[in-house]
Length: 279
Image 1 (cartoon, rainbow, N blue to C red):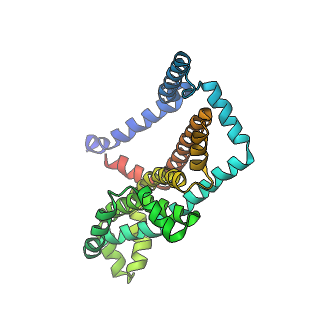
Image 2: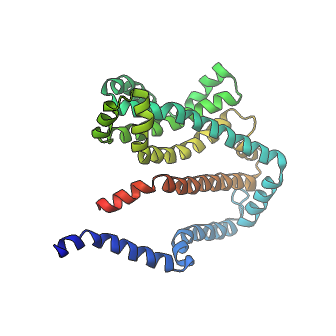
Image 3: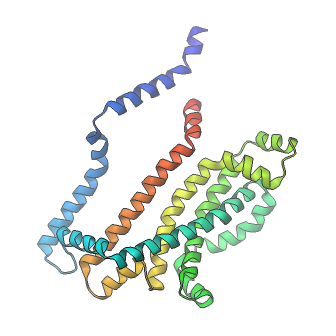
């Protein structure tokens, strides 16, 4: 009996020991494998830029100076913040519509059969290709861009919410029904919390899609924003600013992804714990 009770505790002990080794490890050893490929890429870029000596391939110093200039310009910063605002609005609209729809599809096969043909039709269409139609209907202002971002984030949110709802234990739903909980209440208080790990995974993918569609929409409807700054610099052949904007967009995407991943781990720490115990 002693051996049988000690066996399940062994993976937990190994996990604790591994965590202790990781915590005691120097910080540079943990970060070096992540930073080294980027440093190598930047070094290769600088070597190629100096050897090619082309206006279209500026060096890192020129790109860095252009980035500082952009961040020091109040109008440019205001345009970038406006882009992030449109991105947040489109993402919030996707959360409000796509997540409940996906959860309902996961718990209702009849509703899933009704919605699936629409998602199959929209899925292969590049969302930026819908921008001219939305511009005809809603003009070239913020609304058309927000709707394109909404369309871009909806499919990953819908899919992962659907997968999470399908995986919910039926006993939880039966218990909620036995307690007299109706459909919308079950969706909000039982299915959504149980599906939260999958929903948050869809949110992480949706953030990347929101950034992509935000830049694409602003390249088409060029009034203000990060996409307009990028293409304006390209039209004027100010190539350091082009690469500086690309670098800035990449850094924004990285910061959003890292920040959301930390938030996700806090929100679904219970899921990671249960997964570790099951393993």
